[in-house]
Length: 276
Image (cartoon, rainbow, N blue to C red; front, side, top):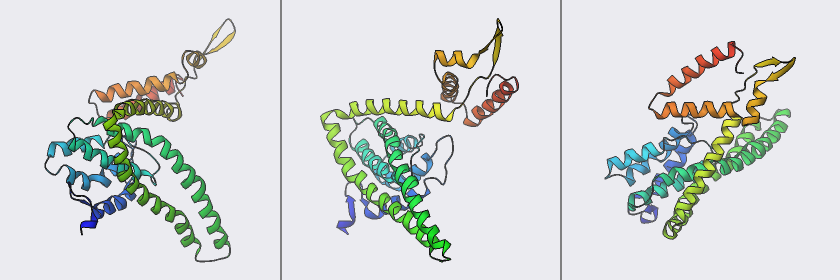
């Protein structure tokens, strides 16, 4: 049984990590537009968090709050981030000088790169390849078609989840310990924060398509208000809207109230022809 133990100090075993592996398949089970996959992420690692903070209820509560911050990435490589998060939680529990905010900074910094890799392979390669081969069997009337589809797509999916979880925990903890020892963790956290802000800016430009179609005539020339707004700053309206909602939520207001305000204000401005 000793070989089954992965961390003697906290009593974490391979069985616990198998639990994280299987729970990672529920990552999208509670997907929502407020916290994205955060609840699924916390659900996956929660049994191990309970072992790490078994004698520290407040520490467990703080850890739960940390992992309820919005998280979103391709699901297959997500266990890599889970492994690193577990390793960092152990460091946070052991070292009182460890900065807990670096945990979310690292998670955010990994979302973009790993999602890019995951989307390319799983949605752009494995899915297309599996469907193409399965369709060939289906056209011949073979009952193996759906089985082949599931196998060709899910074998890489299962392997990626298990291998990256182990890699993230073992190699990630070694790398993070070295960074903490040399003082590079603060620099990495700072850079990760910059990457995270840049990623959020890209998401605002892509996911908040607000524009102003209003025009007015000056000396027989039609002037587009949106053109002037773009000259001031591209995507100014999406940015202003997002920052306003962020300030509204930071004051402790509920997300449902923010949604209702967006619906009502958007409807009124849309009827008046001021936004589209």
